[in-house]
Length: 255
Ligand code: URA
Image (cartoon, rainbow, N blue to C red; front, side, top):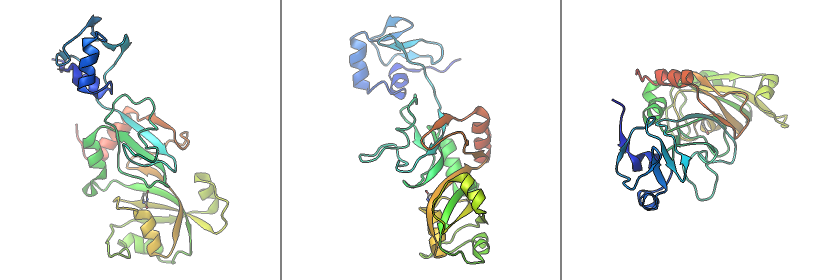
């Protein structure tokens, strides 16, 4: 049998308003179920079957939303912020009001960020036990020690004593770097780094430990899903079903 949910839950999850606001709307006859004004906001409805409208506009129900965002610099990885635009603000045609970013990128970091309300998927992708690879492109300043890749492969110890899991570093050619992100600086070198954890400022701190500085950072993939190259900074698209399934598999979710 199709699952029934309360009308106020249905509308609340779609961001129509608070419970008391919905009661007021219902009293005024602004909410209809199958074309008939409904005064009882605690009545049950069947998403996908019952037709719900507010002020004559259809409100369709989505239980899960999944987006891929190319996070631009200057935007914070949070659901709300008093000072800065958030990554959620950028998802302009979102339906649900309970979306959040899967992990965090620093305010000055760009690139791949998943936005969803699927807590189980987010948790599985971020769990250190699941070893989901995160690949970053960076322009770095300073001279890398010749054994930098070896140190990272063994598992680095950061200057504050934090022991990291093995990571993989590739130094790219300038041409390869310029295909990822432009730079005018002559003194910087492009690298690609794969890590399996997500510690605070991890990539920047890894290079700082080697006396280098990250001047530009972009996440290019997470597990089996890479940033869609057609998305410019600030642009997003829904994840395909195949991408969602691949991410669930990477996180060890079996159904
Ligand atoms: N590591 C960092 O230092 N910053 C990020 O935003 C992501 C990984």
